Length: 249
Ligand SMILES: NC(=O)c1ccc[n+]([C@@H]2O[C@H](COP(=O)([O-])OP(=O)(O)OC[C@H]3O[C@@H](n4cnc5c(N)ncnc54)[C@H](O)[C@@H]3O)[C@@H](O)[C@H]2O)c1
Image 1 (tube, rainbow, N blue to C red):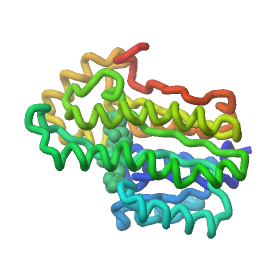
Image 2 (image 1 turned 90 degrees about the vertical axis):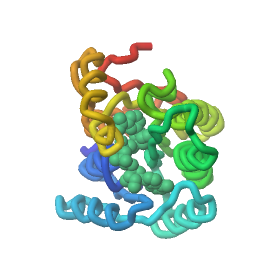
Image 3 (image 1 turned 30 degrees about the vertical axis):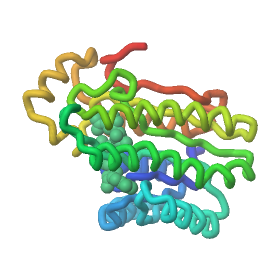
């Protein structure tokens, strides 16, 4: 029996990187996956890759920072699929600007996608999950949300600290309805987000990771699969580190 047989799963930022690994993993476990991304072309490619493997996926154009668009897309998904079992709030952008130089625009943009986007999508899906008396929300936060930015900007780390807090608020609100809400805090993972760091920074950081390497997107997908499955049904409001041991708390 597959872990997510016939579940309807929405993954934001699903076109590439960690989101793509989550989409592929969920689809392989039997879910109907909605690959939601601001980059529709890339989402279409990822969905085709999944379908070529014989699994189920649909690309969806979605900018998570736009409330009107988020509400419209979730309404259409519920009309089409009649339910949403899993939401993974994964869409995110980074910012490498030093704290003293972060402009107001950069602050707003990062917060709008990383934090407001997580809020808007969770809010848009909560009613259907309440009526189903079933649902799993998994938010992709970050190590930076716990310890502050190392290479990434203060706006990025603050947005991720906000995601951790939002996870607990939604977890408390939705627990009486059988909906689990959890977060995963990735450490340094090999995606486009960290590829833009200098080679020197990457090598220096990798040496500080007890398990001796950056993570792969699949390392995150495995933890997300667990939290999105019924194996984790007594876990809610939890923040799970997947970071090779660089922070043990
Ligand atoms: N890579 C890491 O080391 C790392 C560490 C901690 C947390 N994270 C988090 O993991 C998540 C995925 O990051 P990644 O490393 O795979 O990055 P990535 O840049 O490879 O992928 C991000 C995806 O989000 C999409 N996206 C961007 N803005 C969007 C928007 N407004 N609406 C919808 N989709 C949007 C992009 O098109 C892309 O497909 C992010 O939330 C990131 O903050 C990553």
